[in-house]
Amino acid sequence: MHASAEWALSFSRQQQVCDLLALLLFLILSVYLLWPLAIWMIAALVMLLSVSVMVLKRIWQRDISSVGYRPEGLAKRWWLEINDHRYNVRWRDGSVRQRDCVVLCWSFWPWDRLILRADSFVSAEEFRRFRAELYGEI
Image (cartoon, rainbow, N blue to C red; front, side, top):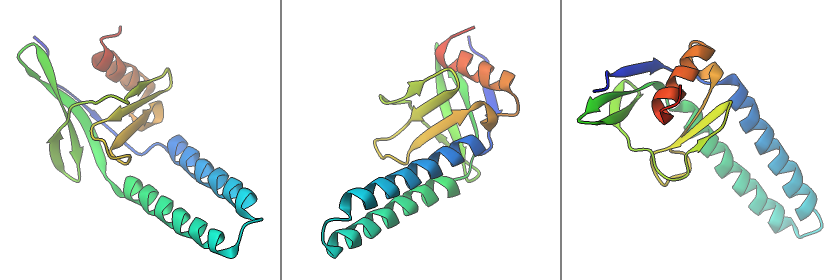
């Protein structure tokens, strides 16, 4: 039987830099590709950029302070603590596991993804322990 576990999270500076660089790259490529088109296309780009910034702002304002699980029979019931309230989650397709990053999806909405890097945890050892519990690795 599994014991319950909890990990405190903080926002990853590395992920925030990646988000901003991706947004900047999108903006530069869009302006470069749409420049020959009419002015109304530039207006559409500005609207699209506004929506992108709103989605990033929504992601960055969401305060996910911890993740963990509790035993439920032979399985683990995972939860997220968002704005001081615990929500049961079920990881869905689209979750990604890499050596330095874990992307966990719990909904079909693009902003309902949890991107975790080693600097999201108290230590790199805690990140390794989280991955081991999540994927059954040692």
